[in-house]
Image (cartoon, rainbow over all chains, first blue to last red; front, top):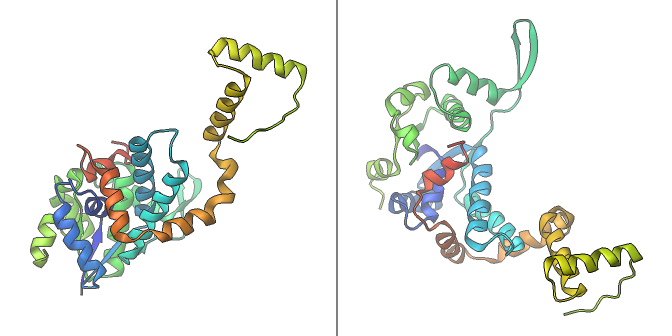
Amino acid sequence: MKQFYMDTNVFISRLKSDDPYHVEAKAIVKSLEENEIQAETSVLALLEVASVSGRLYEAKKGERRGEKERKVFIVRILRRLAGIKPKFINISGDTQVSIRGVQASLPSVFNEAILLSLQSTLRTLDLIHLAAARYAKRMNNELGAFVTGDKEFLSNKKELSRIIGMPILSPKEYAEGLGLQ
Amino acid sequence: MEVLNVKVKKETKEKIERLVKARGYKNKSEALRDMIEEHFDEHPELFADDDVEEIVKEAGKMSDAEFDRLAAEIFRGSKTAAELVGEGRER
């Protein structure tokens, strides 16, 4: 079974019918639901999905309206994400570091992200996704691609692919590569 | 609407009357209604524990197809999915 790392925006593209990658994201999610392919993603995706859906719901429905409906929407979108059965990557545990003799106990995911900051100029949460993807690839060599619609990743795909050890592909490239429609 | 009989201190009553004039409410009842709603809106945590179970139950009732229709409405707009997620990534 083909396996890939799924960036949060691929899942949102599936739900956003006017998104440039909607058609491909829909095909990818359909294949996930039918167990033809398998996705892994950072636990950060859960937080990002909750955050973006809550913000958008409020913007669309108005600040004073639908507080309960907004919560239902957030819970429902998390259930929708869980429905495609991704494997959530959590780089657990702490790493002890010493900086000029000052000891710090860092969540290991932060340590991995800091190490990646030496190799790329991505922003904080991008580094956490990248760290999760690199960790996932180390744990599972079958992981074949990092799929994202994010221009920041796609415009630096050559350099970032080398860092994480697998190609960075747009949903269109990935869906076409697998012949999904 | 429901009717509540509430006892308040004399100073509180006077403050409410001042607000009615200052904010142009029709009467004390309208002013209090507005203030209570405002307080509830600003402090959703007051009810957070009460409704989690109900929210999860409610969310479970919606089919994927129904949810996808609602999500399409919520996410519709000029920004791409990557841009919307990117906003949460400090961009």
